[in-house]
Image 1: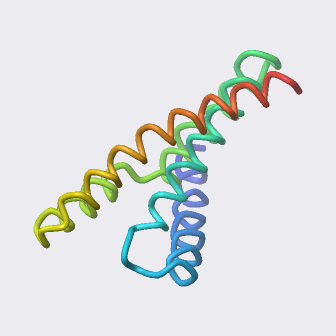
Image 2: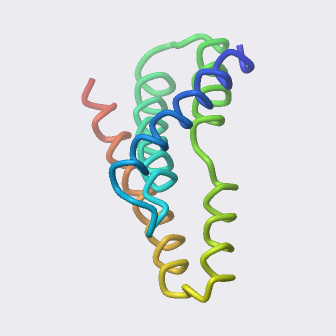
Length: 119
């Protein structure tokens, strides 16, 4: 289940991240940012719906949380892109990327959690 979820999550990450970058440009890593924020939002919904509200089986939880969302989100890419910006002397942009990803990621998770609890 983890492998199948990981396959689907990584394909979605590649597709959505590329789509966002094609439309937003390459000055800021918007693709990775969008993936990490949307993944945090989905994890909040999953936590509220699958773990708090309904008795979802372990296989489904593993498929979604570890497989799909584990492959979909991309913390290591955030670190690589931030390092690349630092190497290029774009210190402010790298700091904004890291701070915004962490802060917005938390708020996206929390929003997903709140909305998931309304189900």
